[in-house]
Length: 231
Length: 102
Image (cartoon, rainbow over all chains, first blue to last red; front, side, top):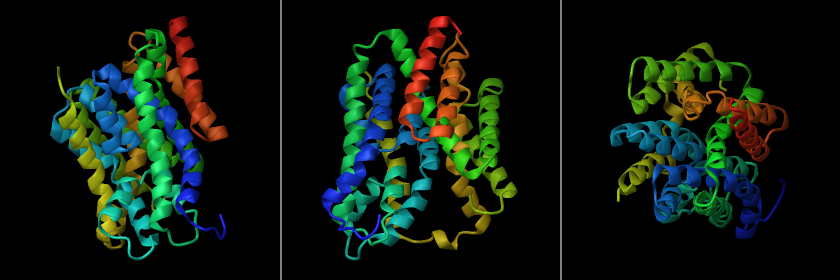
């Protein structure tokens, strides 16, 4: 992307591939929370207020397992800490003079994909461009959630069960992409956290929220010791 | 009927806080390198427990159905990239695995 005029509509155009990617994943989310017993407006509220892929799926599975609110808060916070780093990059690149509510709204829309796409632009980022990019992505996420919920009302049970694999497929696709980009150490770190989490929950009866936090911290700590350079 | 509004909003708060912090303060350059590396590895470390053991337990007694599905998506994502095709393939594979009673 070379010299371009970064307007609201350029933002919408850049956001369209994100829209296409989010829609089916959000549909799966709508389906998952419908099966947890949420109502349609609650599913939509979830995506409107959270707007975070893996964080929402994690929150949904913790809610389903009856986790405490403190477990929920800390686990979701940890998985979303990456946004702090992404936000730091985007904030540095914003045009001057974007303050207050506008800044907070741009922050709310900073997802992994929005981060990646916006930083491909060599120029400073105007608020109007960010609004187009983020609103398009947001529409895909919220719209997909609602449609997934509604589809879930008519889908046969066997197919619903199969569609439930979507959440895991999303994570395994992410893992495969990280593995391709960063090598086998990615798999090692994921294996440590997966093994720890399985052992703690299945063998030692640790509650799922805390076990998630412990295994995540342990694996990234070990990872930071064995990997010297930045991944 | 049970309401889910409170946990939804708690989760929203746990998402918004890490997102909004860097738009107001910049402290990230001052963290010790070990801590900084550790924080950057958290998303990768999260993927393990997000998949296991749930992908087996959700499909009890057909323990391997879900795993067959995510193997398909892993392989497709590795060689082809993207998310849509890998995710669709996992649904198809899991559906047939369930039909076959894997």
